[in-house]
Length: 122
Length: 109
Image (cartoon, rainbow over all chains, first blue to last red; front, side, top):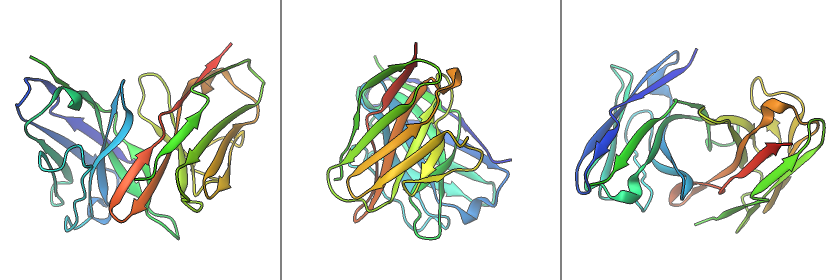
């Protein structure tokens, strides 16, 4: 059974940093691209960043580019999101998600963690 | 950036009724569109991908259709457990970006 378990969230002041972690199990982690997706009341679901199975490609949403960094440790089946210079608008529930591939495209997210809350406030 | 617009924002129906949810893309996404269901307090779940293919374990009452810019998620006969927010989603390649619609909240009368 695929499991994705996020940790590392919490309350942080504007301008602060936080690192989210995602422990993956039940599948060959290195074979899958992963992403972080967030959910906030004001913006709904928003893709934040992704990383290929090898870690060689790491696209970001414009809203977090230059502030967030995604990386992975395939030897320990872990995904991370380093969040720096946090803003109030980064407040959200952050999901670790696995990207699925069909015969024609790799565009969807077939497994989601339960999510971890991040609150940016003074 | 491709924008996905969902309608209606809220849909209130009775058990057994048919629900029709719409997702419109600002430009063509061919058939590369997915639908997700998020029940209160739970993680989103993939329902439909490639516009019309049900994901593993999804009941047959859920169906998807459409191509290009106009897509529909249909729930043929509503069950009380279908209370959720439903999102559509697409991916563009250059630059790589995934976008979601703003969601349709489905309420059961």
